[in-house]
Image (cartoon, rainbow, N blue to C red; front, side):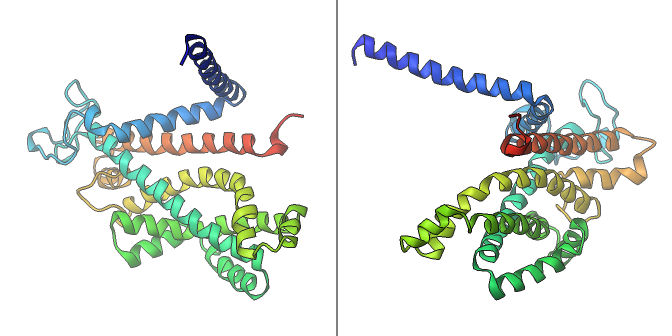
Length: 298
């Protein structure tokens, strides 16, 4: 490559990067609360990924001499009744919460997309049966249905993800069905039918991609609900079993017995849950405003 061509390539690459950075900064200025939510979520994601590097202690190591040690230089957030470092357990607990939240949201969204797409595109008896089942599932609150599923499956990471994913399916299916009903009558779908394209191919190639925007908005909003539901299940003893660190279980072990004598055992896990749910809600609102054309200024 000649020097002039090389310089031109570098200029184009720099302009591309500068354009992306500028667009990101513009979105952050226009949606400051969403930017705050994104920063909060980025901190928790990085903490979960780098837990091995940023924690000074093993979260499972029991040290009897450090039982209920208050926050200090050695243990920034104190130690629990078994002498385990609270900070290390909260950081590793981020892995559990994010794994359950993201896993259950993706699983519930995948099933919801398939069900909603089939219901809205096929109509007839398929739509009738699917909607009655969805009505039954939506009659129960998210936490109640998750409790039933978790109690039936037993406490484990995989079962917790599955127990939370099932109650999320009806909400995704309803949104996808509504989008599909609106899209299936549009001219580009009629044109695809006129060319002899099969119904399955039309649904997957033309209808499904146009339902992704509301799906992303809904999934972002449901992420916080899934994380909060996991904390509730663990608090009730139906979520992630010991010895794995879970924010909800940390609260369950400490709330009643040590809330007065060792308040740091309640404050820090509760603060972590509140921050991550707050961050997902802020991010979800910003994503909705960005992807929904009706929210944009003319």
